[in-house]
Length: 233
Image (cartoon, rainbow, N blue to C red; front, top):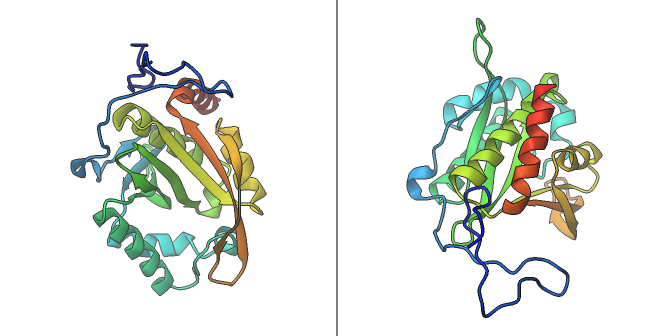
Protein backbone atom coordinates (compact mmCIF):
# COMPACT_ATOMS: atom_id res chain seq x y z
CA UNK A 1 0.00 0.00 0.00
CA UNK A 2 1.21 3.49 -0.83
CA UNK A 3 0.70 6.46 1.51
CA UNK A 4 -2.82 7.88 1.52
CA UNK A 5 -3.47 10.72 -0.94
CA UNK A 6 -5.80 13.27 0.65
CA UNK A 7 -7.27 10.56 2.85
CA UNK A 8 -7.74 8.13 -0.04
CA UNK A 9 -5.83 4.88 0.29
CA UNK A 10 -4.06 4.17 -3.01
CA UNK A 11 -3.19 0.56 -3.81
CA UNK A 12 -1.23 -1.19 -6.52
CA UNK A 13 -2.41 -4.69 -7.48
CA UNK A 14 0.01 -7.44 -8.41
CA UNK A 15 -2.15 -8.60 -11.34
CA UNK A 16 -2.11 -5.21 -13.06
CA UNK A 17 0.67 -2.98 -14.45
CA UNK A 18 1.60 0.14 -12.48
CA UNK A 19 0.71 2.46 -15.36
CA UNK A 20 -1.38 2.47 -18.51
CA UNK A 21 0.27 2.99 -21.95
CA UNK A 22 0.02 6.79 -21.49
CA UNK A 23 1.76 6.74 -18.13
CA UNK A 24 -1.25 7.19 -15.88
CA UNK A 25 -1.04 5.08 -12.70
CA UNK A 26 -3.22 1.96 -12.40
CA UNK A 27 -4.44 2.18 -8.81
CA UNK A 28 -7.08 0.66 -6.56
CA UNK A 29 -8.96 2.03 -3.57
CA UNK A 30 -11.69 1.04 -1.13
CA UNK A 31 -15.25 0.93 -2.43
CA UNK A 32 -16.93 3.14 0.15
CA UNK A 33 -19.86 5.15 -1.30
CA UNK A 34 -19.77 8.81 -0.27
CA UNK A 35 -21.32 11.16 0.61
CA UNK A 36 -23.55 9.20 2.96
CA UNK A 37 -27.15 10.35 3.55
CA UNK A 38 -26.05 11.99 6.81
CA UNK A 39 -23.44 14.06 4.93
CA UNK A 40 -25.82 16.03 2.71
CA UNK A 41 -26.18 19.14 4.93
CA UNK A 42 -22.67 20.32 5.78
CA UNK A 43 -21.71 23.85 6.78
CA UNK A 44 -18.22 24.84 5.62
CA UNK A 45 -16.53 27.67 7.50
CA UNK A 46 -13.62 29.82 6.37
CA UNK A 47 -12.16 33.14 7.47
CA UNK A 48 -14.27 35.41 5.25
CA UNK A 49 -16.80 32.95 3.84
CA UNK A 50 -19.28 30.48 5.24
CA UNK A 51 -21.12 27.99 3.05
CA UNK A 52 -24.47 26.98 4.54
CA UNK A 53 -27.11 24.58 3.23
CA UNK A 54 -29.31 26.41 0.74
CA UNK A 55 -32.91 26.89 1.90
CA UNK A 56 -36.07 28.55 0.61
CA UNK A 57 -35.55 31.37 3.12
CA UNK A 58 -32.55 32.50 1.05
CA UNK A 59 -34.57 33.24 -2.10
CA UNK A 60 -35.16 36.94 -1.42
CA UNK A 61 -31.52 37.59 -0.51
CA UNK A 62 -30.41 35.89 -3.72
CA UNK A 63 -32.90 37.99 -5.70
CA UNK A 64 -31.25 41.15 -4.37
CA UNK A 65 -27.97 40.27 -6.10
CA UNK A 66 -28.77 37.68 -8.76
CA UNK A 67 -30.50 39.45 -11.66
CA UNK A 68 -27.53 41.38 -13.07
CA UNK A 69 -27.04 40.50 -16.77
CA UNK A 70 -23.35 40.01 -16.07
CA UNK A 71 -24.30 37.12 -13.78
CA UNK A 72 -27.15 35.59 -15.77
CA UNK A 73 -25.59 35.79 -19.25
CA UNK A 74 -24.11 32.31 -19.17
CA UNK A 75 -26.84 30.56 -17.18
CA UNK A 76 -28.68 27.78 -18.97
CA UNK A 77 -32.01 28.79 -17.35
CA UNK A 78 -33.78 32.15 -17.27
CA UNK A 79 -33.11 34.31 -14.21
CA UNK A 80 -35.12 37.53 -14.34
CA UNK A 81 -37.85 37.28 -11.69
CA UNK A 82 -38.43 36.03 -8.18
CA UNK A 83 -40.35 33.12 -9.68
CA UNK A 84 -37.26 32.20 -11.71
CA UNK A 85 -35.12 32.29 -8.56
CA UNK A 86 -37.66 30.25 -6.61
CA UNK A 87 -37.64 27.65 -9.39
CA UNK A 88 -33.83 27.65 -9.40
CA UNK A 89 -33.64 27.13 -5.63
CA UNK A 90 -36.44 24.56 -5.69
CA UNK A 91 -34.62 22.52 -8.31
CA UNK A 92 -31.46 22.54 -6.17
CA UNK A 93 -33.38 21.44 -3.08
CA UNK A 94 -35.09 18.64 -5.01
CA UNK A 95 -31.69 17.44 -6.22
CA UNK A 96 -30.47 17.41 -2.62
CA UNK A 97 -33.48 15.35 -1.53
CA UNK A 98 -32.68 12.90 -4.33
CA UNK A 99 -29.06 12.65 -3.18
CA UNK A 100 -27.75 14.24 -6.38
CA UNK A 101 -26.58 17.64 -5.10
CA UNK A 102 -25.39 19.51 -2.02
CA UNK A 103 -26.36 23.16 -2.63
CA UNK A 104 -24.95 26.01 -0.55
CA UNK A 105 -25.62 29.67 -0.05
CA UNK A 106 -22.40 31.71 0.09
CA UNK A 107 -22.29 34.03 3.09
CA UNK A 108 -19.75 36.80 3.66
CA UNK A 109 -18.87 36.97 7.34
CA UNK A 110 -16.89 39.80 8.93
CA UNK A 111 -16.23 40.76 12.54
CA UNK A 112 -18.57 43.48 13.69
CA UNK A 113 -20.76 43.29 10.57
CA UNK A 114 -23.93 41.43 9.75
CA UNK A 115 -23.55 38.30 7.65
CA UNK A 116 -24.51 38.85 4.03
CA UNK A 117 -25.65 36.43 1.33
CA UNK A 118 -23.39 37.04 -1.68
CA UNK A 119 -24.06 34.05 -3.93
CA UNK A 120 -24.57 30.33 -4.23
CA UNK A 121 -22.68 27.22 -5.29
CA UNK A 122 -23.10 23.45 -5.01
CA UNK A 123 -21.77 19.95 -5.35
CA UNK A 124 -23.81 18.32 -8.11
CA UNK A 125 -23.83 15.29 -10.40
CA UNK A 126 -22.93 13.26 -7.32
CA UNK A 127 -21.82 9.69 -8.11
CA UNK A 128 -21.61 8.08 -4.67
CA UNK A 129 -20.38 4.69 -5.86
CA UNK A 130 -17.45 6.22 -7.73
CA UNK A 131 -16.85 8.99 -5.16
CA UNK A 132 -16.86 11.77 -7.72
CA UNK A 133 -18.94 14.90 -8.14
CA UNK A 134 -18.95 18.30 -9.78
CA UNK A 135 -18.53 21.76 -8.29
CA UNK A 136 -20.76 24.11 -10.20
CA UNK A 137 -23.89 26.29 -10.40
CA UNK A 138 -21.63 28.92 -8.86
CA UNK A 139 -22.36 32.63 -9.04
CA UNK A 140 -21.64 35.69 -6.94
CA UNK A 141 -23.10 39.15 -6.80
CA UNK A 142 -21.14 41.53 -9.00
CA UNK A 143 -19.59 43.35 -6.03
CA UNK A 144 -17.87 40.17 -4.85
CA UNK A 145 -16.62 38.83 -8.15
CA UNK A 146 -12.84 38.63 -8.60
CA UNK A 147 -12.39 38.75 -4.82
CA UNK A 148 -11.18 36.19 -2.30
CA UNK A 149 -14.78 35.02 -1.82
CA UNK A 150 -14.81 32.57 -4.74
CA UNK A 151 -11.25 31.41 -4.02
CA UNK A 152 -12.05 30.64 -0.41
CA UNK A 153 -15.34 28.96 -1.30
CA UNK A 154 -13.57 26.69 -3.80
CA UNK A 155 -10.91 25.92 -1.20
CA UNK A 156 -13.52 24.97 1.41
CA UNK A 157 -15.41 22.77 -1.03
CA UNK A 158 -12.36 21.01 -2.41
CA UNK A 159 -10.95 20.41 1.07
CA UNK A 160 -14.28 18.99 2.20
CA UNK A 161 -14.54 16.79 -0.89
CA UNK A 162 -11.06 15.30 -0.75
CA UNK A 163 -10.36 15.26 2.99
CA UNK A 164 -13.80 14.58 4.49
CA UNK A 165 -15.78 12.80 1.77
CA UNK A 166 -12.73 10.96 0.33
CA UNK A 167 -13.64 11.95 -3.23
CA UNK A 168 -11.30 10.70 -5.94
CA UNK A 169 -12.38 13.20 -8.62
CA UNK A 170 -13.97 16.65 -8.75
CA UNK A 171 -15.27 17.96 -12.07
CA UNK A 172 -15.83 21.56 -13.12
CA UNK A 173 -17.35 22.77 -16.37
CA UNK A 174 -18.24 26.06 -17.96
CA UNK A 175 -19.59 27.63 -21.12
CA UNK A 176 -16.93 27.76 -23.84
CA UNK A 177 -17.74 31.48 -24.27
CA UNK A 178 -17.20 32.24 -20.58
CA UNK A 179 -13.56 33.28 -20.81
CA UNK A 180 -13.43 34.63 -17.25
CA UNK A 181 -14.77 31.40 -15.76
CA UNK A 182 -12.38 29.27 -17.80
CA UNK A 183 -9.42 31.33 -16.61
CA UNK A 184 -10.58 31.17 -12.98
CA UNK A 185 -10.85 27.38 -13.06
CA UNK A 186 -7.38 27.02 -14.55
CA UNK A 187 -6.07 29.50 -11.99
CA UNK A 188 -6.92 27.23 -9.07
CA UNK A 189 -4.99 24.35 -10.63
CA UNK A 190 -7.65 22.30 -12.43
CA UNK A 191 -6.74 20.41 -15.61
CA UNK A 192 -8.73 21.09 -18.77
CA UNK A 193 -9.78 17.73 -20.19
CA UNK A 194 -11.73 18.68 -23.28
CA UNK A 195 -14.80 20.28 -24.82
CA UNK A 196 -18.24 18.69 -25.06
CA UNK A 197 -19.54 20.12 -28.32
CA UNK A 198 -23.26 20.96 -28.66
CA UNK A 199 -23.63 19.96 -25.03
CA UNK A 200 -26.58 22.04 -23.80
CA UNK A 201 -29.47 23.99 -25.32
CA UNK A 202 -29.97 27.01 -23.09
CA UNK A 203 -33.40 28.42 -22.26
CA UNK A 204 -32.70 31.14 -24.83
CA UNK A 205 -32.15 28.46 -27.50
CA UNK A 206 -28.37 28.89 -27.80
CA UNK A 207 -26.39 25.70 -28.36
CA UNK A 208 -23.65 25.72 -25.74
CA UNK A 209 -20.30 23.94 -25.90
CA UNK A 210 -19.08 22.99 -22.41
CA UNK A 211 -15.41 22.96 -21.36
CA UNK A 212 -14.63 20.23 -18.81
CA UNK A 213 -11.94 20.38 -16.13
CA UNK A 214 -10.98 18.08 -13.27
CA UNK A 215 -9.01 17.85 -10.06
CA UNK A 216 -8.29 14.32 -8.84
CA UNK A 217 -7.16 13.08 -5.43
CA UNK A 218 -3.52 12.97 -6.46
CA UNK A 219 -3.68 16.63 -7.54
CA UNK A 220 -5.14 17.87 -4.28
CA UNK A 221 -1.94 18.45 -2.22
CA UNK A 222 -0.52 20.78 -4.90
CA UNK A 223 -3.88 22.47 -5.53
CA UNK A 224 -4.39 22.93 -1.79
CA UNK A 225 -0.98 24.58 -1.40
CA UNK A 226 -1.72 26.81 -4.38
CA UNK A 227 -5.07 27.95 -2.99
CA UNK A 228 -3.66 28.55 0.48
CA UNK A 229 -0.92 30.72 -1.02
CA UNK A 230 -3.54 32.68 -2.97
CA UNK A 231 -5.58 33.22 0.20
CA UNK A 232 -2.55 34.47 2.11
CA UNK A 233 -1.89 37.34 -0.32
